[in-house]
Length: 379
Image (cartoon, rainbow, N blue to C red):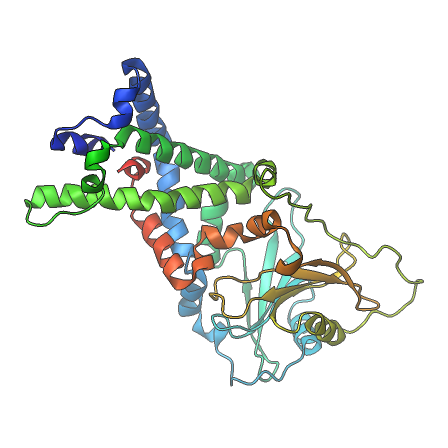
């Protein structure tokens, strides 16, 4: 950060914002910027590096565990009911989620929820089922698999029971403050702005390195701002929702229940019928995952994968279906949502860059990997 702030002075300038601030105010801002960067630096850097990893964590998981993701053939012959029966035979624990095969994970993945102590991270295991023949390819501890453990390190610092998720959210606020204050402290004169954010030709090696540092830091700043804003929104949705509501009022994302359940003993529809009715309700998109009814949600939730989206966009929109009749109880697909709802639902894919395809993911990967110090965001 010190080099980034001093760099414009080597052009014979004093940052324009600094000339507009009283000396004491600027000194206080610089002091706060440096000390918050030092104190929160380790956490922010750890979050940045693990964030780069999990941009491609599914691809890494496949590379580390190829046998779990190798179906016997490309055919999709197995029905949802057959998948659930095969998974239940391998693991009788309740099924929480069923992921449909797709390009990165080309097998059925059934997530089982095992009992766990109150307040601790959910104990989940996965069963992989071959979509071409219904055979179980393997089981594993989902929470402690390497790629998923790095994901948890990024999301909770492995401190789920000790407010780890909230600590990550606070780190997002710190990064946001460092980025904005660093930009304010660095800002050059208008006449030298483009020189300060570009790399010149025919200069000394030292000048070239300083130019690259300054230019790369400035342009990466916008990516880091987006990452920090969406990260805060993911961890603290109740903080972001009123702000988003100033532009477009979001609606509560509830867990719908069937208002008038049928008489006791009425048989539930088979899973295959639910799948067919969900696809008929939304014929233009592929089903990404199923969530069977639970004690707190008496409906099936079916999430959809948008056509043409980056594979990292796991789902975008869902409907809830009555398990007895198959009727749609609630619809939260993009066409039914306000702009505020769509932004809140899209935060995760904005955070990892998947909204903008492979290029967006690579940009987030580079921003996290190069973010060695929170102070570098001011460059």
